[in-house]
Image (tube, rainbow, N blue to C red; front, side, top):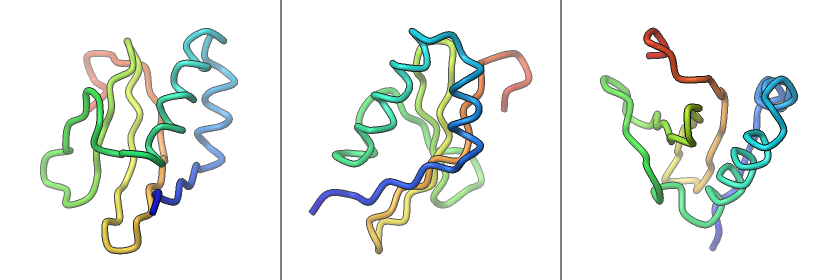
Amino acid sequence: MPWELRIDSVVLKQLKKIPRRYAERIFEVIRSFAINPYAGDIEKMKGEDALWRRRVGSYRVFYEVDGAKKIITVFDVRRRTSNTY
């Protein structure tokens, strides 16, 4: 059974502000979470149980995984800077 993917409206607004070629790549990565949210260059956020981030070039996609219900919620996309985390 594939995972259910939920994308916060804030993420869609953030993607509109990102250059198109990066936004398309980020959106493809987000869509791939429905197949396997643990694939790619991911890292669990320290001190959190279900929060993860995935690196997509100089951008980071932040998402929450509910393993029991098989739901992934993407809630933030940020450009990597020295104070992103």
